[in-house]
Length: 287
Ligand code: NDP
Picture 1: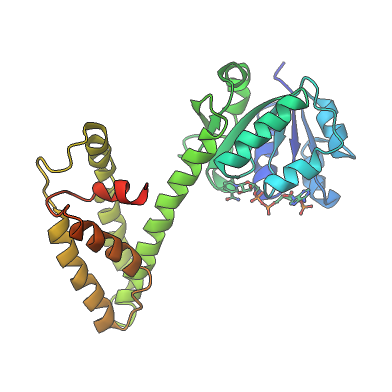
Picture 2 (picture 1 turned 60 degrees about the vertical axis):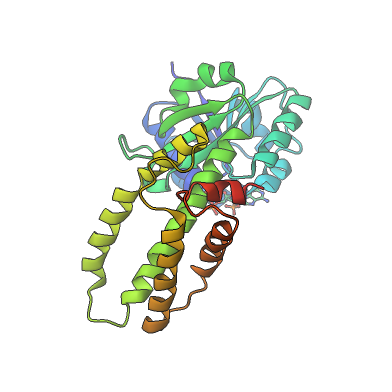
């Protein structure tokens, strides 16, 4: 039969995960701090454990999807983790994940850390585009690979337990910058007779067209060559930034989001990097 799974934490995400395993025919044992949240899952066929320690005892494979790293420590405080395979899908920092892996090892368990690149409605939906990043012992990932691939795609990113969180947060950080830009763009057109719905099409297409520039940045970081074949140099971009800031002023829009980045670009130009593209900003930030 399919491996049974324990799921601790039945928020929006934990519930979606448990449902996906149930739907795929896995036996699922659930636990949640607020017991009422187990009821819909019990109705769908899940076993309900009265305590977190009981949910851990029920199965070898134990999935945690709690609010934050501190709640993981609290929930597992009294559980016997000996011989358990823990899969921690609680979002945390790379440091949290490394410390939690060492904490699990001392308590006799193995730990895979996961970063969920999906929202709950994407879980259990084939080809949703969502996936989970995993890091930790390769053999542990391979052992549970088929089970882990049930709720969404499973991508292994390395033995270092911190790597799933690092990749996760790097992607989320890029997303944060993207959303900041999207919101600034809508603010610029806000007071005009321009339908947001129509503008959104242009905006989404533009972001998609620019996204592959990530590969150009990667090539420059790998080769170390910041200048050959540059089509948009930093000096030009810094001049262009003045137009972005003046347009914001004209439209009555705050420049709070744009100013910190444009100031960094101007500083890099002053440091003599005008002939480069923007990839040198990585060096500036990573100091
Ligand atoms: P919710 O806020 O919906 O659920 C939080 C869960 O954590 C609940 O089960 C809650 O229990 C439990 N919890 C919180 N604090 C404690 C504690 N001290 N002790 C025991 N249990 C606790 O969050 P989500 O389900 O949305 O998110 C869970 C994890 O998944 C987070 O780390 C989040 O970053 C990650 N994630 C979520 C995504 C999303 O779009 N939702 C996307 C990607 C990752 P109770 O019911 O008792 O409050």
